[in-house]
Image: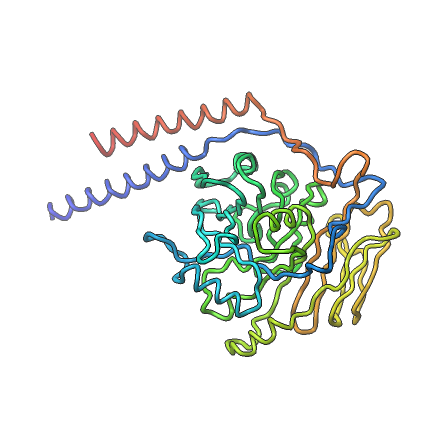
Length: 400
């Protein structure tokens, strides 16, 4: 009996030690600046920004997946296949551009240095607040284990944005804590990742756009299982770009001349069907803004073409057609297309938004958030006090 009690005390002490250490880790990684965020300010102005203004049909379109995991050196792997194998799996399915975005690691292209893209997925936090970081020379290892606050998320965007070319806000729909309030506040990212498999509406993107935070959008597989037909080639992007080199990719991603697509799992495991269908996808043949209208034309007939605007309002819908246009009223802050096809495919355009061309080159604004010095000092002082208290508790209850 005495032996059982002794073992129980040891186990209890181990559990308590693990719990206190975990709390210390959360507190220690919660350090952040605290910001005052600007009030939402919808897009306005006499002009309409056209993300497809520089479209050159000579280069349109190249099929791309920018969010891809592979096997890496070491024991922490989210995919069992090496980059070369993953690239070949995409190539068979008609992809022209594949970038390897492993967690907190820059992956070398398996066979062509001209196709090297320095991109990684930032974040190991428990809430899946992840970002794709393009163009950074090194990996930034800092992360909040529990990014509860909008200020913590903004702090990460600011740090990563200062050392990279492009930031993509990954899968907000699957990120714990994504709220309308946060989407209305956060800025500093260039691209929103769409359609995490839970829906096709992407209302969270409209929350941000309606608050005046302009971003383009990509839909990526976030691939971990290239051998499973229901995991690969479910989402893709079509980019108007002359090559798969990083200089061209960077220019295109920052310019906006691309659209995104969701596809069904063609064949439900029949790879021959999946390959054939992926090489004959419906697509965009024309898109842009002219004479007050946003317009789109398609290679195949769609069940419906919807135009969404401010506050996720349905501005216009056309049924059973290969083309439509919509006249943007002066009160329309922005407009974006969502196209539904009878085969289950869905296309998403980048947004056309109001701005003043005499003052800026696009609707994307300079960051509006400002550091609240007093709250920053108080918040981080409280964290330090909590860390010291936990350390004392650990010493008294575990060590002593």
